[in-house]
Length: 629
View 1 (cartoon, helix red, strand yellow):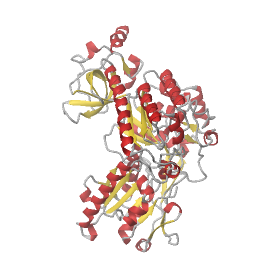
View 2 (cartoon, rainbow, N blue to C red):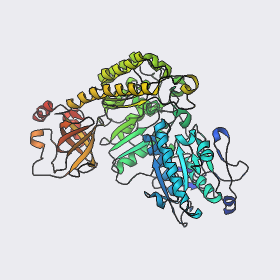
View 3 (cartoon, one colour):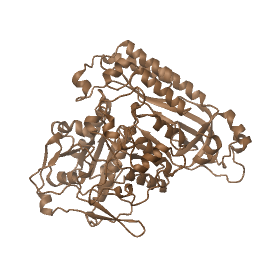
View 4 (cartoon, rainbow, N blue to C red):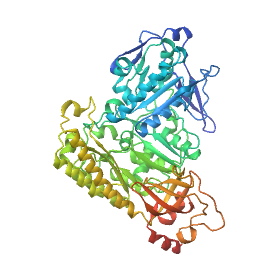
């Protein structure tokens, strides 16, 4: 990872580590003469290679670190306005870039009119997402016309769309001053300074085979009770329809020590739900070893020079396989879920690596009161080891995203998904066997290349058979550069795509509505998010199964398991639930996407699971459990 600020660690008497940052500083003369180019591999060289300019001085972001630098100490600070579109990865990426910029003298503002820099973090997955971004960029261009030259903000396009449409953004439409791909956020300060200093365009869309930003602590909103933590980047699956491997690059997994450290920091800050992120999160496999000399963020902890959590293998309930893998630093590759395959040989990449089951177990062990989710996974990477960790750890949410994309084996083959309809359904059965009551969500594409009516009917029947709790359903949108765009014909008419999509949505809503009705009477563990947007006298929160629940904002006591006695909590200990607290909620009604209920009392994740053995319980079981206690 190219950065002029490198970290070195040394162990003290008490096992503490001292951080020393050595930063290269460019001279004023060099900065004034900076010229920007857009050439090189992937259009990714943003500086003239003949000029002697130091690479990015991006922050290392270690909590409590002493950085020996004065870049932004005395100079006037500037404002940066950021808009984020697309997936959770983009949200976390925006937090990373804000951390990089904060160290170089930029503060986030929510007012675009006050901004010295406007950055748009983009999504390239579908036409509709890109169309909205084009509109926003045109609006920002109109704002620039109304300002004096010295007051014009620098406009930058970041992320997947920046990599895909770099030339059009900078030259043809001239809607941006700079573009930076997902692996170039460390260079943002350089790119911004180049544009501001010379007026020329700047670009860095070079894809990296090692960048994970694992040494940067993201800037998050103060008081947040949920957070995203990126554990890997890129994707090697190369599904025919998907642009992600071309905009995000190859898979690379982040140092597990840095992941655990960040999660522990979040726990200490009061965060109650963490989502582990990756383009293919459950393919996580870390086999990197610390290099010689200076090392990146917290790699020394992975080598036993510090303590992240409990000692490896000592957590209560850890399986022997996961404990051994954690202690040894890796384990044999046990294979994909039955009936699944990939275009590459996984043994070469995962044999001896610390794999997802072990990482998930380690993260869950950090704080039993912190919920753990992960997204987005690929169905192939759900071997029994992963499912068993989810079943065993009460704080790993029993809600799995299992993107089917299609219910037709012929369609799945054209999509290069690596499985059949039958293999997918077998995996669903396996999930339900190992994790009873697990909520399942999915992604569906309607009207993919060559899709027949029979293929479509197979997808409709899959929706009915599985009964998904949530689904993200879209008509196929061809992406330039993908395998499908190069080798297949987008031959399904748009009106047919939309009709099929509507039928898939109808099938989903029918089964989802039935599942919502089944919730009535159940008691769920709910993490309070805050006041309802529609009624300030009501609170809203999320269940373990990722459903939103709304209930009255009234004082309650401590939940004890008996809904009749504890719904008001008695006179002692009455308090109104606060954001970030767990409560027990009995569901009394529902709509298509929301549950309505009555708060029975405040509780904790551990206490609720001790009472019921799960994060929800049928109404008829509540009184019986309480009586037994």
